[in-house]
Amino acid sequence: MTTITSLEVRRIGGRIGAEVLGADLARDLPPAEFLTSALNEHKALFFRGQDLDDPGHARFISLFGELTTAHPTVPSVEGAPNVLAVNGDEGIRANRWHTDVTFLRTPPKATSLRGIVIPESGGNTLIASSVAAYNDLPAPLRDFADTLWAVHTNDYDYADPPRSAKAAEHRRVFTSTRYRTEHPVVRVHPETGERGLFIGGFATRIVGLSAAESADVLRIFQSYVTRPENVVRWQWAPGDVIIFDNRATQHYAPDDYGTQPRLLHRVTVVGDAPVAIDGSTSRIVEGDGATHYTPS
Image 1 (spheres, rainbow, N blue to C red):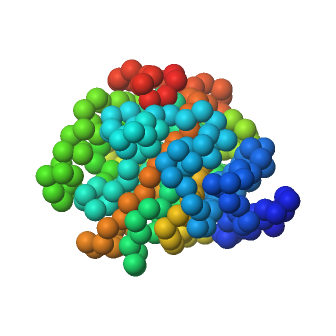
Image 2 (cartoon, one colour):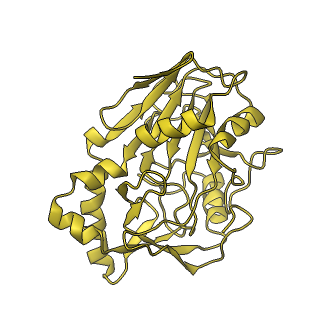
């Protein structure tokens, strides 16, 4: 457990996740250096019962860096250009493991979610450490992964089939501009130097392999990411704020809350192009740099 002034960082998972105790994010923001160090170590940070609105949420997350706009293709919350509504009540449920916006060359550095409307049961968020997953690989698989690149695209059904006309329209908007990017399967973290498996739901193909071969290889590597020992689960309450390192994690929202409403607001931090172990960086295959969303 780490302590600074009135703050405590208490580990809640064996390999990932820590709760920050004693923080009042509406009144007294923690030092940026303290937060960055804690995020690098724990990969996901959790803050209970905060009294934040959209501007306050954005102000807090800007401690981690410049903010992106809400999304490359999906509109923001009205009047809040940096905020994306994650609304399960509209049938838009991303219940697949994924890392946010990896179909761009420069995916977000970090993602933050804030609980607004929370189901009475279910609706948790699971976050997995892709660094722990890489470290778990047997040496032959690790050596193999080090050589691979994967194609990521937004033209892929990472969520369940649309349940309503509204959900179908959301999918149409989501893919209204098609993006494809080649990323290294093993990404070197720009701050810690750790290696992690950079795959997830938007990774659809291994460069140089067939579709069937790619599916088998991705399934093997993904099984290490989602091992229970590499996953932390957060049970939401209204006002909770979480942030996770998008360069070192995947996340999943189980679709287990039926017709109950669930609404989170999301804010993301500008990231850089992933770097492979040989120093080469990700490359655009289709689409532009989405500079309306994030600097290239």
